[in-house]
Length: 196
Length: 245
Image (spheres, each protein chain N blue to C red):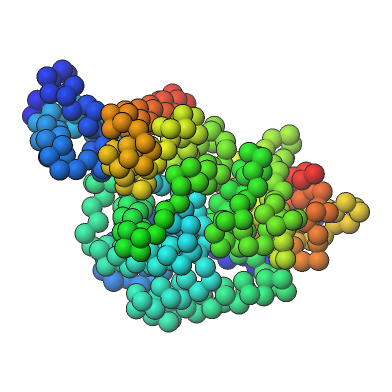
């Protein structure tokens, strides 16, 4: 059995981006290998099309490579930046190709399957992703759909009201209530974590 | 900026903050909400917290292994030197293509993520959908395609990790030791099949803090026959065991 250690795994995301910003190709290679599964996974989860997802994922990585010098850590994490780029490119790709995106229920289901399903570990690690996954699972179905449609697919309240066949006010309420519940879950778990 | 806890405008805009945080508020509504936030610390704080959660929703998407050759094509577009990336990538491609003949092992958190996803699928009573992406697990998994077995790795009665066995044409397994396991150094991975036969899957190294994660092909072993997976010391002592079925 041969072991392939990821020595570059010691470097932070911010450190890798700093290297990329000055043209360090080895940093770019490490960054790609660290993020390619998340980037491709998001694009694939939204499109259900491996070809489109690869195009999007590659474009996202290239943009990160080119725009690394302008990344501002004060505005959010590297992961958030990279995946927001990916999400926006995916939305653009879907519109340009007039492709049908995956159903938000399918996105949510695949996201929940990727949970390690161990809330205690999630809290211990302080991983907001796991906490949000758990909270998403607990949301009423219609609220989960609404917040995924908005957060992931970039749908406005008006678009959601039309696609879901509900009044605009109801769409807004679902979005807001869902996001507030997710925030409450994160705050609760962070509070628990702090007490420990 | 208004720091008062209650601002007459806050109620008016509270409903808009969620959509603003999600980036789906448009036009005049967006302009008005932003204008209020700029003058209200309470709503600015609220918006920041909601935005953080909104960003996280995008991040919960599952990790998926890109198609074969993804790196090669990407690094070519990026203009990354052959000396840095493709050399390793070609090696990985060979390893993937000949996984069934190879006993080499790739380490990586991605593999663990795939395993965890599959493990959760089992835990939730779900099977990996046939429409799943072109990950190695989705293409050739399961004792029947799309199935997986997973179990906790137990050491002295404590869960110290996870094992998952994937079937299909090219069966493989993953194993993860959490960083609080007491396993250290070089150890062996052994699976025991239903006929009692012991199959050495490979040798690997656990970090000084007790963390380790790896995957390995299951050559000449039918995943359906695997009953236990063991972490075994070089002297033959079984350090941790996972009972798969």
